[in-house]
Image (cartoon, rainbow, N blue to C red; front, top):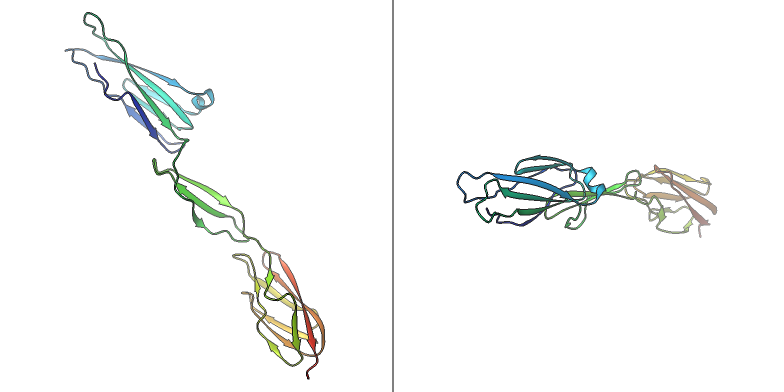
Length: 219
């Protein structure tokens, strides 16, 4: 009786099902082979795996972690001198994967977490992880804007987190400067007269920013 392969390691996805069939050959006419399976590993790993054994076929359902099994095979007919047990050791590994690089499946926004995934090059299992939401901080192209009465200014812009948008632009003193803004962070300022004011910008995520404006008299 012979078993060509003595050790086998297979990589599978967590929670998957794996079936192994052991093929042994005997040269004794009319001989039949007996199979005995033994499982080794930690108790926590053993409890998570469900085994179904039928002669030379073993099926593991809900594979978790690493499970090692040994199939012992012997002849039911023994010539003089006897034939010892032959065995094959099988390692079913649902834990130690070889991954490629993380790829972005969904970009993070200020309202929703992002999603990345990577795939095991051995078994095809895909691992996924969520990424933090995008930062909702607002940033103005200028910390303070200086204008001249009677002039129109279009260079002030506000950048925001991914997926966010401006929901309101407001001047603290419309008599000094007015603002007409868009959801994309661009705006138009119109200086009315000398004085100081503050432009308040708010986004859909709740972020806000105040931008000081100083208007000097026309020359």
